[in-house]
Image (cartoon, rainbow, N blue to C red; front, side, top):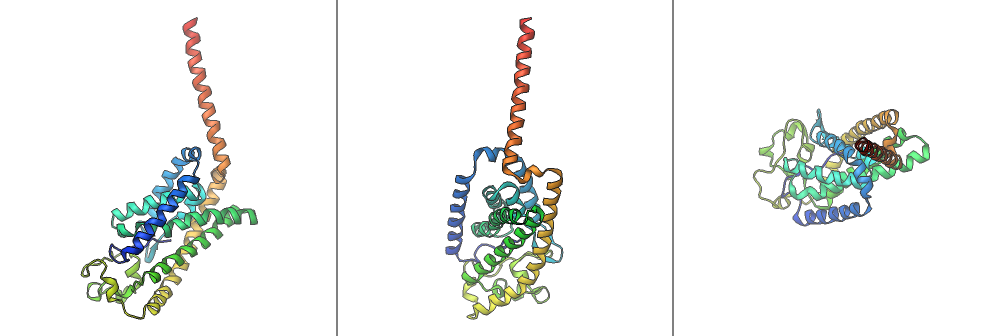
Length: 284
C-alpha cells in the first residue's frame, strides 16, 4: 500500500536496528528458498516489475495521500522470495531519493515486503479454492494490504510516535487543511520533513495520551486505506486477467521453467546444426 515516509530520527534507533535485523533474516530465507534456475528465468520479468513498482511507489494517487505498491502483483508473478528481495531494493532506492529515511529501510521492507509474501500464498490458496485466478488475486490483494496497513499502524504505536508532533505546527500550517495524515504519508503538494528538531528528540515532545493519538491517526488512515485497497485490488486483478488471456504461463512456475527449458533446448539444437553444418561444408 504505502511505505513509511518518516525521515531519519523519527523512529527510535533501536526499532530501526530491529527492522534491519528482521529484514536481513527474511532476505536470508529468500536466498535459501529461491532456486537459482528459477531466478535466471524470472530476471527479465523481475526487472519489469521493479520498474513498475518504482513508478507506482513514487507517484501519489492524485488527491489521495497514498501510493500504490504493486507488491502483491509482484509476489504473484515472481514468487514471495524474489518479490521481497525486489521490494527491499526498491525501498532502499527510494530512501536515496528522499522517500523516507535510510534508517527506516528495514522497517519499510518488512511492511511492503509482507504484501509480496502474503499476496503470493493467499493467491495460491484462494485460486485453488475458488478455481478462479482473477478473483483469487483480488482477494489476496485485499487481505495482504489489510495486513500491511495493520503493520504500519502497529509500528507507529509500538515505537510510541506521536503523529501530531512530527512536524512543528508553525512549520506546517497546511496541516490545518490537509489533516494529520499528511504528517505520515506524503501528499502531492508537500514533502513532510523534520526541520527544527534534532534526530531522536521527537519522542520527547509527544504527549502522554499516546494511545488516543494513534487511535485518532488510525481513524484517519483506515477510510482512505480502504479506498486504496479497492483501487490496488482492481488494478492487480485486471493485470492478472490480462496475463491470463495473453500469457497464462506466467502464472505457473512450472510452466515458466518448462518454456525456458524448451527455449534453451531449441537454442542448443540450432547451435549444434550451425556448427555441424559449417563442419560438413569444410569437409566437402
